[in-house]
Amino acid sequence: MNSYWISSTNKINKNQFNRIDQNYSTDVCIIGAGLTGLSTAYYLSKKGLKVIVLDKSEIGTKTSGHTTAKITLNHGLIYNYLINTFGIEFASKYYLSNNQAISNIKNIIDTEKIDCDFEYQDNYIYTTDEKNVFKINNEIESINLIEKYLTENYNFNKENLNINPQFTTRCGLPFRISGAIKTCNQAQFHPVKYMYGLANSIQSNGGLIFTNSLVTDVKKKDNEYEVWVNDYKIKTKYVVLASHYPFINFPGFYFSKMYQVTSYAVGIEIDENILNCMYINDCEPILSFRTAKLDNDKKLLIIGGGNHKCGFSPESRDIFGYKYLENEIKKYYPNSKIMYKWNTRDCITLDKVPYIGEFSSLMPNCFVATGFNKWGMTMSNVSANIISDCILAKENEFLDIYNSKRLQPIKNKEEVKNEIKQVFKSFVQNRIQIPKEDLSSIKNDNGGIIKIDGNSVGIYKDKSGNIYAINPTCTHLGCLLTWNNVDKTWDCPCHGSRFDYTGKNLYDPAFKDLKMYEVRSEK
Image 1 (cartoon, rainbow, N blue to C red):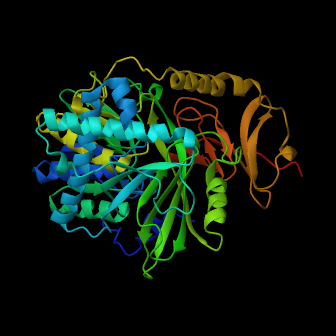
Image 2 (image 1 turned 90 degrees about the vertical axis):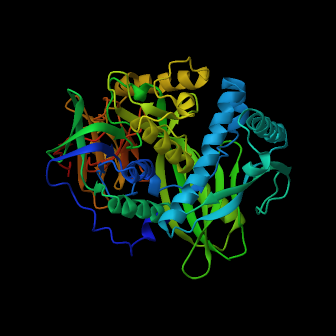
Image 3 (image 1 turned 135 degrees about the horizontal axis):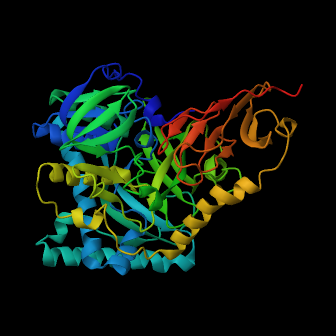
């Protein structure tokens, strides 16, 4: 089963975007044709700049097309954390930038007449634990403090914010809650329809978009960059890394500042009058709800959650992966049929704030947007505005809080400790502990790492017993991969790269395939 967003856009003409087949010279080269890359290209092309967008796959087929697509400034219980960690001004800018992003997205949809099922919705963050009700109340108080700060310091009319945060114990979910924060005028849409609308507008503005075009290198040369893609060269003054996770390791060192988690979603058909809002709970395991329109006048209920760090088996715990979501569906919608299933990767920063701006002081005019912490619908637009302003030499009032070169100490020390521990385990401990088993220890339709002639070899046996053998060392930075038996993939527990069982690269930051070995059956 595939993502509903991708499966429901088969009628869109996707053949208008092809592989790059010659050298080019441009003002801006954007790597990544997801929401961030396309939004940035849209703003810059409207200003008359020559823009080229590159993607190794198709438009919106990675993270942007495997989301729940909630357009909201309520990124979990974030504002109490931001005030306590960074202060009221910082939290207010975060709030305001995401609030503006909702309006910006609606303005683009109206201006370009993009049919993408956009609709305003109330949003709920709920808890089912009486002990956590105080967290809900603290978040409401934090938002009220932010709105007070904005009215006093930004000449903002609170009524214009129109968020109206309030506490409630009733929200329409099929189970009892202890409390929730309700906010108004948040939104949802069909992200892939929106992205193709952006792509059409970019082309109308003179921009070029190339798909199935893998970027393998970015080189600084004099006052410009050379971007190498499919053996062709693009000369450009500006580069934007909008590829979810930066594939350039140095000098940015972003791999040391964030990690990736896998998030899951399941879609079931429901009656029109059930659940007309957006919902997410306050803590792990995450359980999220929203609806989408189907062609038969019914709705698709999208239930998301089951998150876990990349590299962990989704089968290892009952609160991970599709198993968790399917169990919840059986409890509350026992007669429903699962129509769609999908999962994706999200970059999580150690301080819970995205990195947006210049990639490194050593690479001027190269920009990055990453680490959206699962809230890419608004953050993609925030990023596009900040980076566009940087390229157009305009001031942006939000650049300082998302500063990608920030060096302040990370106060979430437990998160840092866990990340260091996991990387050490993958680099050292797991290599020592690889069991010296033979091929017979791996059953059909399963995989694992064994020792062959003293070397670690990743083995997958399909249902017929055919063997696929790979070098289980990640082509990104050399971490030992783990086998994911749900998706039949090799996953990196350090930085989240993913490969299929033949070794083909699926998810960044790695972009090179794994080396395959020839291993014969013991029969």
